[in-house]
Image (tube, rainbow, N blue to C red):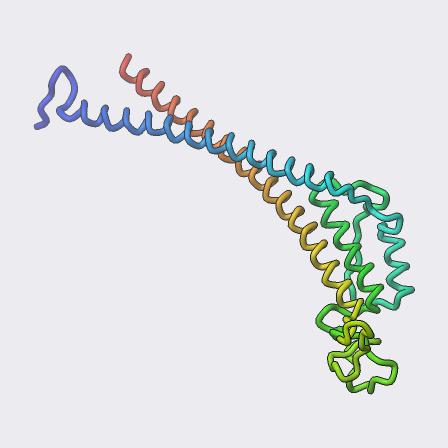
Length: 222
């Protein structure tokens, strides 16, 4: 038979202590989640603000042809095929956000392809080719990788670099920076979403812990 003391079985105080520990643990977990949520939200907004401020300093403005309709016409006139054309619009707009930076970068790529006749960096030759260069030595129109058929600079006596290839290097550097701004902006937004999720989870934990504590007190009063 179980030993009864003051109407309560032996071990009741131990179970009471364990329940109390779990309940206050719930409050602690709630406080931690809420704190992490607030920090994540603040950091997310701060990150997005930094991206916007950095882009504003560059004073980038979309050119008038940065609309889907106009860029499609330009690409067609340039004979570009099999390229993905932008569907966003930043014509005459200041580039101050991550999404606009990504949109601007997509237009830059099309402009560069128009200048290189549709050839990418890896498809173009390193040097400017001589007019009489054999077709077998031509990498892309007007370029070659063979120094023997390259135009020679009269001052340096070195092969002349392919200007279109250098243009592609510059475009890649700029679009990479713009796409990085977009990524940073999206990470900031992700941090804000996660922060709110943590905040709501913390509030939920607090409510559950309070409900359990209130239920215990009600049971003890009966």
